[in-house]
Amino acid sequence: MEELLDFLKGPLLPFVFMIFLLGLVRQVVLSTWALIEASRKAGDTNIPYGRVLRNIATWVFPVAHLHRSLPVFSYASFFFHVGVVMSAIFLREHIDLFGHLGLNWPSIPRPYVDWLALLALIGLTVLLGYRIYVRQSRAVSSFADYAILVLLILTVGMGYLAGQSWNVIPYNVTMVFHIAAGSAILVLIPFTKLAHCLLYPFVRLSSEIGWHFTRDAGYDVVKTLYGPEGRKI
View 1 (cartoon, rainbow, N blue to C red):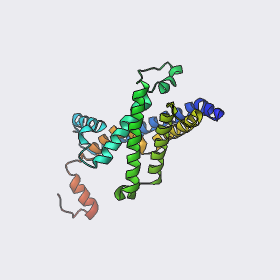
View 2 (tube, rainbow, N blue to C red):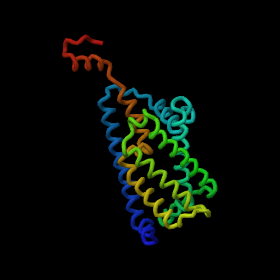
View 3 (tube, helix red, strand yellow):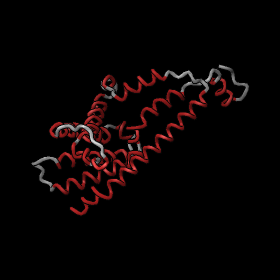
View 4 (cartoon, rainbow, N blue to C red):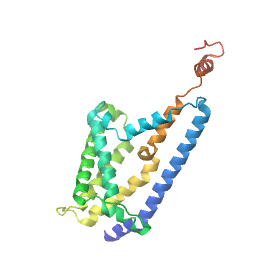
């Protein structure tokens, strides 16, 4: 088990981060190119970028939207995102992984990180239960949706247990599961819906651009559907 842990923390981890970063760079390049193409073809270039950016900000920090629709799901998702992002970025042990690159940033004391991890676990458990027991959510859920949630629960749960003195599971075992599941999540992020962690602004902006039709767009649609005899609208 110790040899496996050394492999996960040693040769595998840089490889995982390389796939993660290159995959996200690819997504950003493709999304940027798609935005340029959409802007070129839209015809109406009078896009209110200020309003779009404010709208994006309200959804990146969606406190005002949580109670409006599906409050249980919304709050669970919010708690998960806050807990997992804060605990992953500001845990001292995670920061130390980048020490050899000369990178360093402030950390959050361990007791607070533990509470953040528990907050993320509660949110993830509710989200998984929502997909299992709510018919509407179950109908649109794929195997990947369940697998990602299970991997996230395994990553956060084992990471939390590894830092507890009362943990009855051997430390190396918890760390193997924590790093293996976390590595799988990092590899999957650029190739699944998890990529929204970086692509969300592009999605909102492309949606705004996509609805900026030219003045005669309605007539062009009718002509395409019904021929030149279609009535102008």
